[in-house]
Length: 338
Image (cartoon, rainbow, N blue to C red; front, side):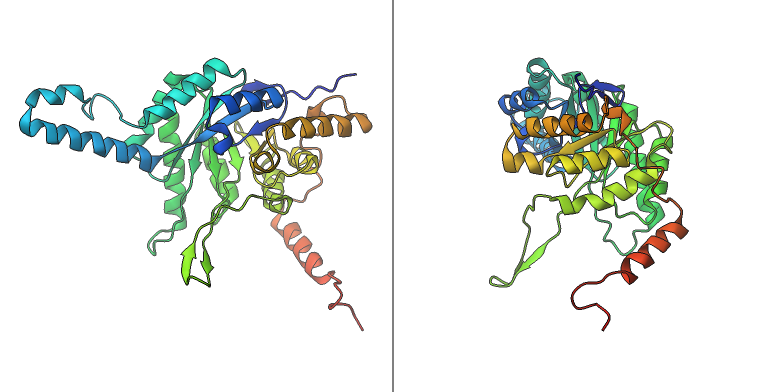
C-alpha cells in the first residue's frame, strides 16, 4: 500500500514534506525542473536582497538626473519613484519562468533587515506568479543602542509591511538569536504571518592566521546543526494560531527529516544535502521516508508529525532539570570517577 506523504504548508497542498530552500541550485529554471522531477514538493528561489533593490533604484535615479541636464525628454524613459519600484528585473523573470515551467509551488524570497519602501517589491513578486513569499530576515543587531524589544518590534513590523503588500502567503525565516524567541514567534503569528522557517543560518567570520585578515566562508550545514531547531519546533508545535512550521538547516539523511517531522515540522527544507549530492538525492530521502514509515506500520506522514512533541517538556523548570542532568551525567574517558 502506498504511503501518503502529503502535507500542508502556508495553506498550500504539497505532495510531500520535502521543500528545497534558497540556494544557487534554485537560480536556474533547468535546475528547478530537475529538482521538481526528483520529488521536491515546493522550491524557494534564491533571495533578492534589499541592497540589490536599493542599488538599482539609485542607479536609475542617477541616470535620470544625468540625462536631464542635456535632454529633458530623457526623463520620460525612466519611471519615477512614485510610479514604480525599480529593482532587478531578472529576478521577476525567474519567478515568472519558474511558475510557467515548473509544476510545483514557487516561493520567492526577500532578504532584508529594515522597514522601507523596498518591501513594495513583494507585490511585484506576487504579480510575477510567486505562490508565496519567504521573508528572510537577516540582521545582526550589533549597535550598542540596539535593544531586544526594539529589534523584535522592527522584525514584526517588517513582516507586517510585507503582508500588507500581498494576498499570497508570507513565511518569515528567522535566526534563533532573540532574547525570547518564543515570544517573537507568537508575535509574528498574531500579526498574521502564515509560516515560520527555523532557522536562518548566520554566517560567522573567521580569522585567517596566515594572512592576518578576516574571512567569510560558506560552510554547508550538517546533521549536528538540527538540535536547536528540534528544541524550538517542539516548543511551538500546536501552540500557534495560524503559522505553519518549516524546519531548516542540518538535513543530511532521512534521519534528520524524520526527527524534524516528529518534533512538529509541517515541512522540512534543505539545501546543503542537495549541494553535496545533487537534485537526485531527493529521491533517496523520499524512498527512505516511505520505507521507515512502512516498516513501522504508518500509512501517512501526518501520523508522525509532532509525534514526540507531547513528550518533550516545555517548562523552564524541566528544561533546567534536563540541562543539569546532561552535564552531571557525562562520563567521557577523562571524566570518569576513579
